[in-house]
Amino acid sequence: MPNRQPTMDASTKLVYDNIYSNAVMFLRRAIKELIAHSGDHLEREQAVVACIFIQMSIELGFKAYLIKTCSLSSILLKKHKDQPIQELMEAFEQGKLKTKSFEDLKNIIIADEGLFDEERIQYINDFQDYRNQAVHFHLNLAPGDLFDLRYDLVYMLVHVVIPILTEINMDFETPSEFYENQLDKNDFKTLIKFRPYVEEMKKVAAEHSRLVYNCIECEERTYNVDNEMCYCCNLQFTDFGEYVTCISCKAPRSVIFDHNNIAINDNIMNGLCLNCGERPEVFKCPHCGVARAFYDKRELKMVCCEMAEA
Ligand SMILES: [Zn+2]
Ligand SMILES: [Zn+2]
Ligand SMILES: [Zn+2]
Image 1 (tube, rainbow, N blue to C red):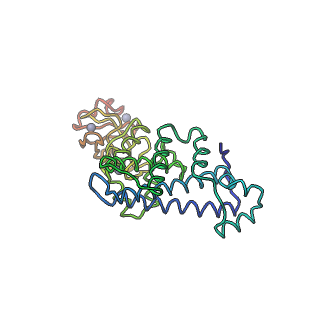
Image 2: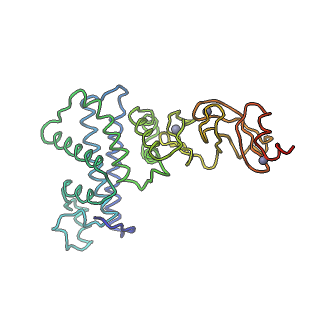
Image 3: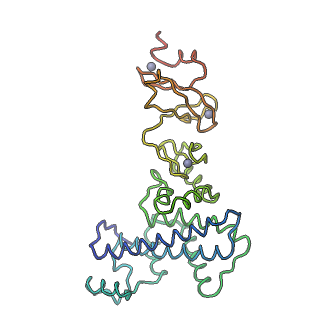
């Protein structure tokens, strides 16, 4: 099991950076294939190429992860065991460094409890199998597979690639943040509109927050009110909004308003319910700070300290 080792020496870092950037390169190509076609299934050629690319990305990603969390020697064959780092670097530069098989690397990774659950391990095994079929004989894909693979590839992107290549904690950050940084603008835009990706992000959002509403940017139900971020399009506010209960649908903290500008606006701003789409106004009391949505100003008398006294 890898023991987390935060620092790498310069030589190890050089190997790591090369492997990591190649993992990302194959990932970008896998995503390009995946989103190239807006229909409800992949073309067979796209599917095979996407599977191979994602598997390449995972294999390199596993190595990068192990180098970072364990050591360079953790991914190398035994014959390199006692070689000093200078010799290893020479072998690396000459392309003669021999690494363990994917099967062996995978077993080390799987033994790292808490990284991948049974479901994720099953996906990893399936893609390893697709890759072997495609490389050695022929990857047999039925029409149904060409539909399912769009979802399976997205699952790999979100639940296998992200934990391996990033330190994103999905409680506070979104996988889309990584993809926004790594993909070109058009591919990122296409990815966040790609239905299998959107559906997966809805699930991720629901798993990580109690308060998930519609995003004002991408309009998907992937906006986490607690952290003011959208799991799908990566919209992120830093202390932009404040949220109050909607008086139409009663959803808690669903009406967003711009609390930074409300004081200069007579303590009243337009609000927008991210749950039902209604647009009540919001009053924020300058004395006690309590904010309420309302339609009729007369309702305010009942809710605010000062107004109640007046
Ligand atoms: Zn969004
Ligand atoms: Zn509402
Ligand atoms: Zn008040």
